[in-house]
Image (tube, rainbow, N blue to C red; front, side):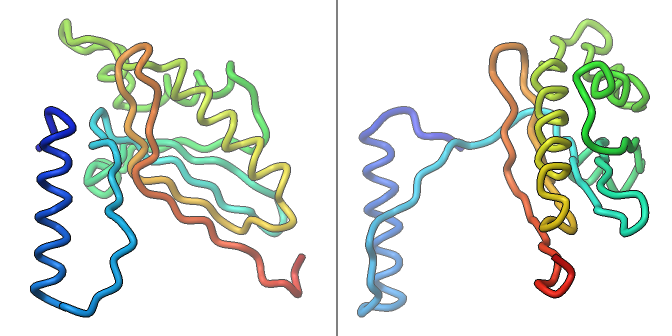
Length: 161
């Protein structure tokens, strides 16, 4: 469900505030958060900082597919675009990314760029970041970018930094 125009957004905002007021009349309401309804092919991107080998990055089919088909691949961080593209080619879902059975292909270059940036982030901050999880990362069609819908970063305990 998406808003068609500003009037629709205003109507929904008033409904949310009204509902909140009915539930808790004395609630402090500073505003209403509005964000894009993310859509696309769900991917998962994660990282673990291994105590012996250092940080590595994982990518695979996301959302419920991360649990059902367990389609992932790993690389040590940091890495470049070529390595990111190789990772994506290794996935079973690669055929879907490229436009399976005449479907419009997804923006593989934007996804590869996101992987490179995550690899650089976890490598540059290896002393601080213990793990990282982005699921889902929505991959959209060419020119539409990727969107991280949910993410979590775990930091190393201060004593280990």
